[in-house]
Amino acid sequence: MAEKTVTFVTGNLNKLREAQSIVSRFSAPVALVHRGIDLDEIQGSVDEIAEAKCRQAAAIIGGPTLIEDTSLGFRAMGGLPGPYVKWFMKALGAPQLPRMLADFDDKHATAMCVMAYTEGPGAPIHVFKGTCDGRIVTASGPTTFGWDCVFAPEGQDGKTFAEMTPEAKNQISHRSKAFKMLAAFFANA
Image 1: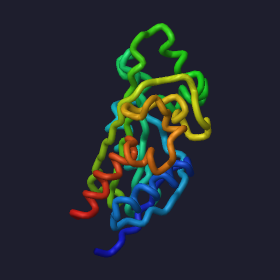
Image 2 (image 1 turned 90 degrees about the vertical axis):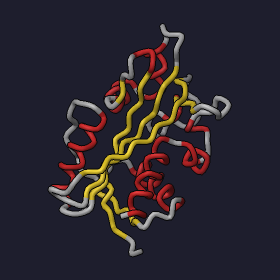
Image 3 (image 1 turned 30 degrees about the horizontal axis):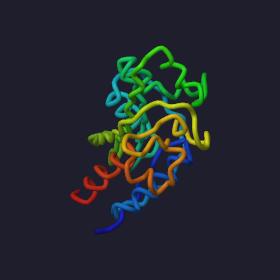
Image 4 (image 1 turned 120 degrees about the vertical axis):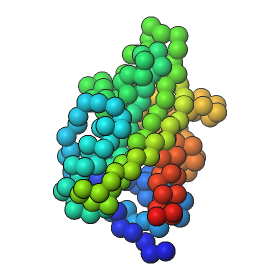
């Protein structure tokens, strides 16, 4: 099967490196190229946000386009900040996120990666979602990649994503699970 070139639209080079590593692990017949485009941030469900971003990016790219939107939901807060975590990160920084749960006993959180892919403008949009459950903890490990330093995935002895090796994180992460579904989609296309 011939390799397909897909433009992965993200302004976050850490996400690009992680995505390329994950795609190679699944032997997907895809080559990801990067393009940073500032896309509109709409309000809505995770699916609505991802589809709107994908549609907007595809209109600019003009060909196979992939976007990724990450969400972090706190159970004690009914799933918030959810897809709006980016704005909380900009205002507070990752080390301050645990303070949002200071008055709650429940520190459970769900990380979600929503991928949206289209062949181009006007083509159907395919959505793939991966989740990873864990807890919000005091910042531990490097603070250089989003909220990784405050998210301790289940089954990892309290280690945050930031404390894990990239390879270990990519085995269990929300992004890895979404990419696994995307790789299966490309393998069956």
